[in-house]
Amino acid sequence: MEKVIISPSILSADFANLEKDIKRAEIAGADWIHVDVMDGHFVPNITIGIPVVKSLRAITNLPLDVHLMIENPDQYIEPFANAGADIITFHYEAEIDYKQIKDTILKIKSFGVKAGISIKPKTNPDVLIPYLNEVDMVLIMTVEPGFGGQKFIQECAEKIKFVKEKSNKDLIIQVDGGINDITAKICKSYGANSLVAGNYIYKSEDIVQSIKALRN
Ligand code: DX5
Ligand code: ZN
Image (cartoon, rainbow, N blue to C red; front, side):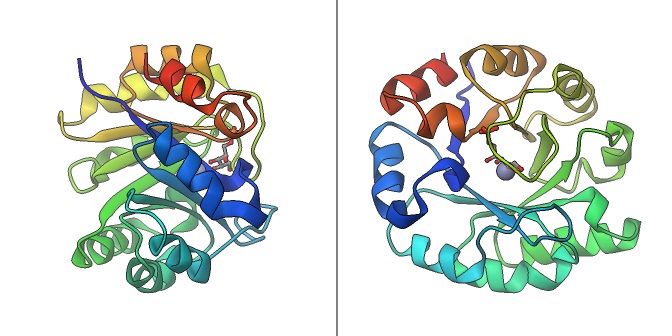
């Protein structure tokens, strides 16, 4: 069976001890580290940005999976790539039109970084069709972006099936929001092969066990 990529979201980690929490995830078998970047405009919350990604690059060899929940993402691709991002995902809703989305994808790839496109819960997955052959990853949000610890929206997960049917086999289909051992099973059954989890991993007593439960 295909290996599922587990990407712990450090939004739920201890920001005063990020290095420690990233090492814990590394030892527990995490595949990527998910970094949620929020600007207070695209979403009603502000988190971390380029300097933090640069500092994290120095302390881990795990791929940095950077989820941009910001307006004008095209303006920030170069600094995030230079800071050490391995995957950069931007939001479909943050871009103006087809051309800007295509250009953003090309820009991400020009730095040798994997390109991801994400849709919010209310966005129809049809909008992704023109880009499915261009991107490396689609991120289906299963909560409204902005905060960790929210409840999984089952109807959003059904979009995974649609994307899976329309895409080639190499596309990474990631889900983010309310992922735990139970919702992970649902998403995997629909075809997701990358799971982001914040609270389920970082608020658990046993992080090794949580990562294992997401995988199996
Ligand atoms: C929400 C973020 C998520 C968040 C997920 O806007 O994109 O990555 O950290 O947190 P949980 O897994 O707690 O729902
Ligand atoms: Zn995220």
